[in-house]
Length: 60
Image (cartoon, rainbow, N blue to C red; front, side, top):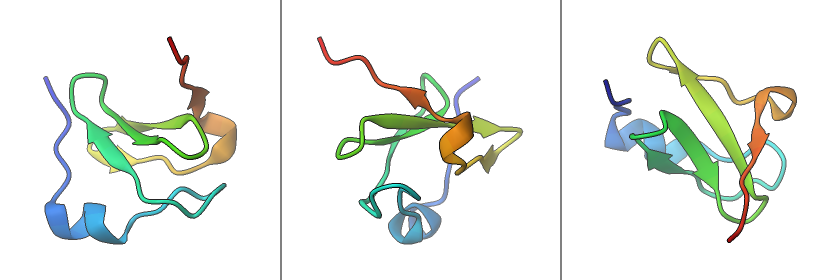
């Protein structure tokens, strides 16, 4: 199952830490902020935009 977020919603969502735009990673069911390096989970179709709930994205 892959997460889906409407385009209009994705256009207005921003990272709570950096205020940068988010991109959808539907495979991982996360919203990712490339600027802050955080990934926010999507649970039951609802983005959880809490820095405390985000995971740090590992840069390879």
